[in-house]
Image 1 (cartoon, each protein chain N blue to C red):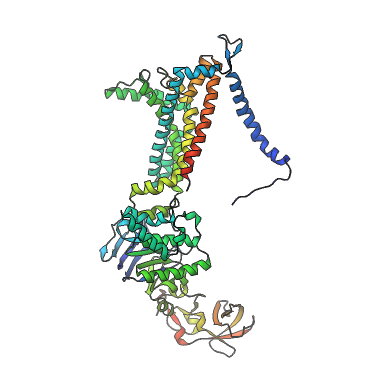
Image 2 (cartoon, rainbow over the protein chains, first blue to last red; image 1 turned 60 degrees about the horizontal axis):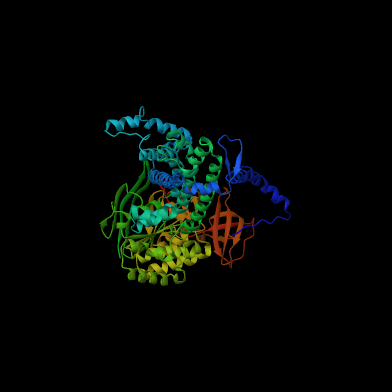
Length: 293
Length: 333
């Protein structure tokens, strides 16, 4: 059933929309417009004047092997973060859902990491894995494994993925647990009486009924991995070694504020904007269709 | 085709005893209804038979085989839930075929069995629909269909009609009865509605606080309640209870008299009471009278009799045989 409210004039609806429009204009349209404008200029080395280059920045970026490598890095990084954080969260949520005693404590403890800011989480993991003073690195050394994420590209990637996923697991866990608990007990019991064992029940009943939650988390986590992991990467690896952990967002920062190439940085922001738009459209068009029942 | 036996079955949650030793013998093809107020343990008992709740002590046997330790799927039962518990993401066909698919039944046999169940339940036009596109009554039928296609030894019904409106409930009640007759499957049916119990049951079990107070044919239970609880719970309007001493009965504590066994007269009989109000229902009239001690007594009389006007004093009379005398422990004397 659709409920429609029909306004008589245009003043009230305009007034009701105004705050949202103002916020969107100031914090989205204005900076986005500025980025697009800046992306068409190249500043001189001293930042004194700028020169109009049209689409030159984009042309250069698309031919730049470092920029293309950053695309691959981002794809690997965000897929890993999404899969790891959602997979672990789902596993924990299934366990917590079956728990009868002490579920409150268990849940509270699992939610804590979410309260830790990404940059702080990054520092925490960096200390644990620090090649000289890190506890975990030291134990790995005792076991005969020479941990060095400062030099080893795969180890660096592994570490930022784990550090980025860690806090995220709490968030995903909450949603998965709520999703699992929203499935009526009797539906699961009916499946049990129908002869489905745990794994069959999960595959044929629980997973399909959980799919709206999973889809939501997929979108949210990909966006998280794209944008909000900056703090973790900045504190742990600063994009290194050899740009192995320079994801697109980090490159926007390092080219713009470290390299002082604001034109290229702005152009990268514009590309990111288009990319995220595309990704969202794809996700809603092709995946969402399959998740509703 | 199966028998079902419950042998001194008990259940406790921690220190709380919920079921205090229930014995039931269900013969092949029999329709047994368990009726009782909320919280009397009837649903728990059913879930114990289904294998969804553990059994603290005692034994449940299906076809003389102990099933206490068996998983729900190994017990060869099917259950219809109060909220139907249909799989919301599957079509009606898939809902009914689910159990068969898991049992690796050949495809053509699945199609045949679902088709015949759908025909029996008039669900044929809806096989490709999702549960949310069906009405309450249709959902109820799908839930029944899912139970039927598996050809179980025992049907379990957990208040299957309580989510339906009154008219549909009466209709589905009849359908369930017919279906059970037709298929001849041993059934255990839980309800809090005594009308369902009276109309559906071959034998009914009246449960009270974890104890089976009485087991018997519906009319036997109605006419000959063994405890004060059964006398008060079965029958609407409820039995009138009076202290034994107040009406000159020397044994027992309480005397129960059903509303239809009391006759109202102008001339003195047993007790005098004042008419408080009348409910004329057409075929019958319920007259509520107040005794001098303030207690309300309900009398059921034919609708053709003249309506006593409120405030008049009348006499209540009954035969000795209509008196049901109960002792201190609530048991019939």
